[in-house]
Image (cartoon, rainbow, N blue to C red; front, side, top):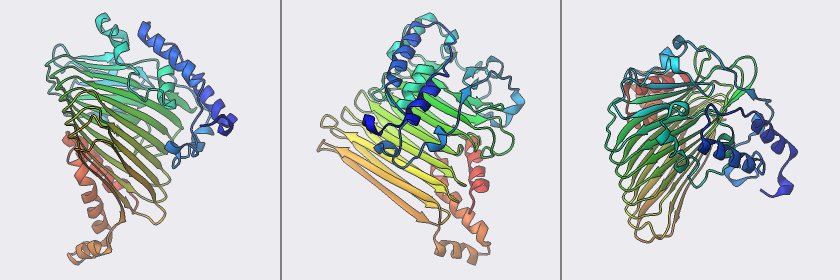
Length: 444
């Protein structure tokens, strides 16, 4: 962005957000160095606008018009999050409320010996010394909102799986927003390290303590979240990310993944909440023979905006990537998808596919989609595509001819559209919960 196109509001809004930062929860040299370096970088940036290519379909004006405050420290009872606890993950959860670790709600007794999960304050000293090798080391760490998080986060969720350790019980990581009477800013940060030959299933959730359905209105808040996942050689990570902030929230998140040789990463991104959300998915290969699966489901209605930008960057041969992202868009909602797969000359024998399918449930629903391949290597097998459609009248009529009413027929077709993604989610209770949201939240 050229200096003459930057408005005072963009600069002042970013400065206001940066000035909300509070001291770190612990004195770790690597974290202090990262925050100071990132602060200097952020002061040279501005909030992006639709004049920026990467943001041209997503208008951040509603975010600029809110005056955010520091997130308060609140006491949340377990009863407020009880319905979100996963039966498949007993005694295997970390809970952060308004960005701060909450020990009374967390319980990791089910994790096997040697697996470490907690916040940075309790991290063993030998692992604290290694944080600088992982945090903000991905190529796009200078992106404005990622850098803002690096400059401002006060606590850090850490999951560390040692070499050869297989974690059978899924780990639930909950970031809970509990707004009071003022708009607040929270900046969750998470680091996941899966060492060689290890395995982990992680469920990362963003929820609010708002009563009723997650899309209900409440006090506005802004979740600016960053999660970094490192897979060493032959590591296996199954990762679910569920965003269901309340209907007044803003959510901008980055998931940055680094894969070493022969590692396997499966990602299931489920986006339901927030009035405006943006999710940046970045996968970077640092060894050959990696396998990457990216599944996504965006379910929005009313006047919601949900933007998904993904990049899979290859640097070595024999990599495999499969991406399927689906959007169900109702009422006056707006979905955006931009996916890139980058295959340079060094990444021969790459096998990659990318598909974005969109279902519009209303004449006023909108979608902007741009699947994108950037290929220099000549010995590859790559494909990409996108579809935008509405419910087929013939299919609805067929179901009606079998005795179903029109609403039930339409719901069945929407359920079938979402099922391809949901059946890949590794936890049955989560599949059922999201399927119920598909059934009751989409306005036909």
